Every structure is written in C-alpha cells, then in structure tokens.
Length: 343
Image (cartoon, rainbow, N blue to C red; front, side):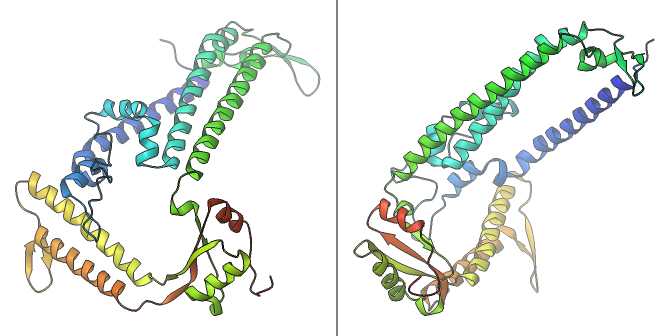
C-alpha cells in the first residue's frame, strides 16, 4: 500500500476540511430554511401578510397591482441556483435596483472566468507539468548542481519543470490568455454599468432632480433661509428647499416597530404550522397568547410614531433642495459651500 507524501497529504487534508465545512453549511441551510420564513420565504410571507404603509397602500404590489416580490421562492436546493441564473436583468433592475443587477453580474462573471481558468489548467497545464522532468536540476547558493525529486501532486505543478525547460512558455501563454480574458470581461461589465447608469440618470424621479445638503450652519436651518441661499446661487432654478427634521426618536421607535412586525409574523407562522399556539411571558399577567401580544405591541408603537410625526418636530442640520432640471441638480452637486455667504 502506497503512502501519500507530504505534498499530497497537505492537499488531501485541506480538501477533507473544505468538504466537511461545506456539508455543515449546507445542512444548516436545509435545517433553518423551513424554520426561518422571514429569511428564506419572505416573498410568500409579505404577500400573505398584505403589508401596507401608513396610508393603507399595499407594499407588496406595484401601482398596476402586480406583486413586487418575484420570482417565486425556490422549490428545492438546486432550484436556488437555477433561479439565480434564470432571472432576467430587467426584472432585477425594475424590482430590486441597479446595485443588485451589478452584484449578480459580477458573481456571474467570476463564475465563468474561473470555469475557463479551470478548464485551461486541466487541459493544458496539467499535461505539460505532469510530463516534465521528474528529477530536475537546480543550482544551490554555492553554484553546485543538485538534483530534486518530485512526487505526488507535485508532478502536476510547476515544480516538476526544470528552470531551462521550454515548457514554461505554456504557463506564459495561459497567463496571457487569462489576463486578456479578465480585461475584456471587466471592460464589458463596465460598458454595461455605464449603460445602466445612464438609464438611471435619465429617469424622471426626484432623486435625479434634487440633492441633500449636510452640515448646514445654524442660521440657515430653516426652509426659507436654505431656499434663499440656493436661489441666490442658482436664480430661477430652485423649486423648493426643505429642512430634514430630527427623527432620532422615531428611528429608535422604528427599530422596535420592525422587531414587533417580524416577531408577529414568526408567531403567526408558528401558530399555523405548529401543534400549539406560541406563548409570551408578560410581566404581571403570566403567559399570554404571543400573536395577540405582538399585535397589540405593533399597534402601540405605530400609534406613538404617528403622534410624534403629527406633533412639533425639531430641525436638523441637513436638508433637501429640489431643482427644475437634472442638469441644474448635477451642477449644484459639484459645488462646495463654506460657512460664509461669500464662499
């Protein structure tokens, strides 16, 4: 029975550790997927819950009444990867935004690049290295020729090729091909990014007609003063200016509100799929129905948020300025104002 040498043994140990780690992650995914509906089945949960905003408008449908969350949930583990590659970029752009499109394109590009690199390595470099000089000669620090012995996985590595061998041109050729391929693929992705960016900037949406102003001096922290400053710099081009309110209290309540929503959804899911309705330990009242508790908690926080929004709000040192055209907004976004009127 042959015993692997140190070169092969290290690779084998790393492979075994990698396979074991992969199996653990896959097992955890398969275990938690049916138990975490808010993470792995959010589209279904959102549609069934019939989310609405504060004005009662459904959040899971577009203005035409079509469901926003698409495509449908994957039906199996393999289906997860199929749907990622089958979804169209236009669907991603319309429903999730340009960042998601470009991230997915980057992952696809890397996948295809490494597939090509793997095939070139297996078809060209492995045979070239594997048939190299098993006992190559090299020169030590004293100028004496010594002999090295290559075994195991080292036979398909560059260490099996002597320094004077023309086989190194194979490595140079493959490296050149992969570098050119990487440059071409990155250039192609940049062209697509530029096209999407141009498409986005042409959209008639408020984000392309306005800008956010930060660190506004205290004497200009009113809607009227902010409008006057920008109207003096861009006469007739400013539509409106509005200060941002200090919403720290509401932001803190929003975290509690979202926690109540997520917990309520999870409790509803457990009530529908479990044998018993979930319970919640409430101070002074013992165990109460968890669905009822989180429903009341959600409405309590929502009412508190509405009361704060309808009451007097403090101004912050940031504001929005809206312009007549996208060109004016773009020009204004390149200007830096100082603390003094003449700057």
